[in-house]
Amino acid sequence: MYASALRSEILERAPGPRRQRAEGRIAVGVSASAGASRVVRLSESGSSRLRLPRSEHGLDGVLLNIAGGLACGDRMAVEAEVGPGATLALSTPGAERVYRSDGADVTVSTRLSVGAEGRLSWLPQETILFDRSRLVRTLEADVAADGRLTVYEALAFGRQARGETVETGLLQDRWRVRRGGRLVFAETLRLAGPVRDLLAKRTVGGGATALATLLHVAPDAEARVDAVREALLGHDVEAGVSAWNGVLTVRLLARLSEALRDAARAVLPLLTGRPLPRVWAC
Image 1: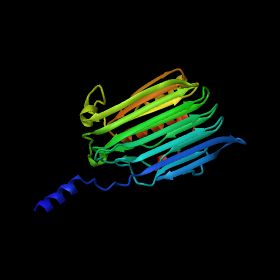
Image 2: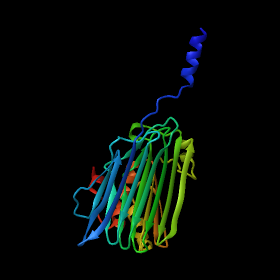
Image 3: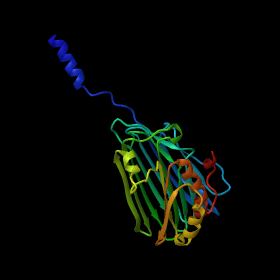
């Protein structure tokens, strides 16, 4: 009996098997040559891939996660560098999903760089957070004084069509953007614990289950405010638009992620100067 109890105690203390988590990294560099933008550097590792479909509107890149979603402990990273005079639009083929965690965080990091008179559009489709998911995300960008950067990130708390909600979890989203070497935008959004209750508060989400932030950094950003506000009229979203010192920011709240997509389709082409990548039509 003593030996049996001892064996049971040893088994309880023994660490469980280490689970294999997904890791992925993409690093891409683009330069302008003979009036066109071309990829001059590309590396892929783990579960991350970059595809470059043909486009008549410039150089498009589609970011793929072949792991099929993100779960506890997964780590993903993207680095994109657009050289002087070059252009690049990066998007995803569909919504990314962050599944329930047993304690470990999903970490996603993005680093963007735009050279003189370059243009980079970071346009992933929405990220869907599941109940008890844990996402820690960072975005850092360096933009030349005459460069152009458009960033759009949307979050959906559960799949509304299936009646899902996010009761608890963790979302930490940290953005730092520099223009001409100076910090022009810095914020950290953190929702921890009772996510649904927090979003229900009037001062937080007012009952919204989807939100998005659109950031446009460009020499003429302030001149776009009226056009953006007009484009948002008639959409089923709560929106705020502001601009200062070459930075335009749009905040969107909605009860359905489809409403965010419709608003984004109306606004983003005004800022990027081109139609949305074809994957947005899927």
